[in-house]
Image 1 (cartoon, rainbow, N blue to C red):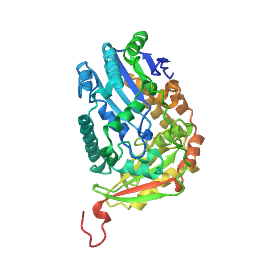
Image 2: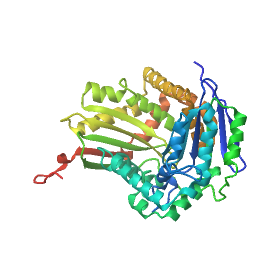
Image 3: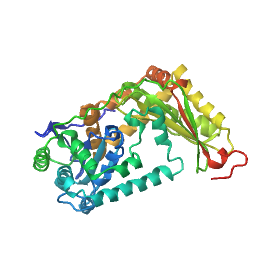
Image 4: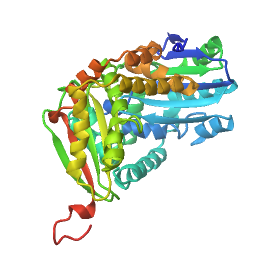
Length: 435
């Protein structure tokens, strides 16, 4: 089956804004996707959480858009939109009827160019409380909610910006002044630090004219790119790290984390394929062994999180069935990972993993919003939006030897973080009362 090719234009405005346009006239919809090259790795010590904070602040109005009106305007036009923050980037996006693309571009340009006109102490205080409430709901008060924060802190040293989670420190957010937040915006939210991708039933020349009209007068930031500290890390931790976490959880669950190659390294793609072999659905090795055959786990997962700064993360978890010996569960998990280091995957397993990956990639490319997101991602992280047309071929070329090689590099005893979550009562010593 031939892999479809995404045809696109790629150019820069005089102020440095990168514009990518891919026409697709199949249905009258379009996606506008804007990536800023700023994430939690760009935050300074004592100023964590700012990138995520701006994910919220960016919806609180600008010079010509009222507080919380951005999404209301998009929805009134028949579209949807949102934003997200990660370690390496922040992005904002709208999917709209094709005749409303100009509106979406104007909205994004208005907040890029005039957000500070509307940023008040009240807005900052309000969104700071929203973020704190999000942390309580998603991290502090959710069962197993601290796993990602703990895993990153263990895999990356305190001097590394991946050590802290994207939501940041509440102490840092509480201490942030209006001037601190404005300075962060002025530095990072500039046209020469952004990529706008427009995909769908649009005319390329018209999109170019609208983009020039609305973004063209926004000045570039001459202080970009931001210089980051040296993010280089050893490929492995050097020793196993273990922690037992008493928590308000219904069943014990073990989380595993390992340092992995950086995003963009073909070895990480082989590790993605290993994840399909290990945990890609009910036919995978871990599901067959832990859930179906030995019946020691309720569920199991294994996946990669690709980062560009020094190392990525390979991670997984298994929720124990009631009464199961956790040492037995952990031993069975590592046995399956270590099998990949000593014997090649079978042709059938690799064919199945490639079929799952191909279905995921082709399914994403069928959607204009996903195409726009990937074009912005590859342009922002690798200066290469054309990867959208090559990445599937790279996955389909992976061999059993590629998987075995990266498994040997990553699935090592001295490269493991093990977080064992147990119901709080299981961790009590004799005579202690439940917390």
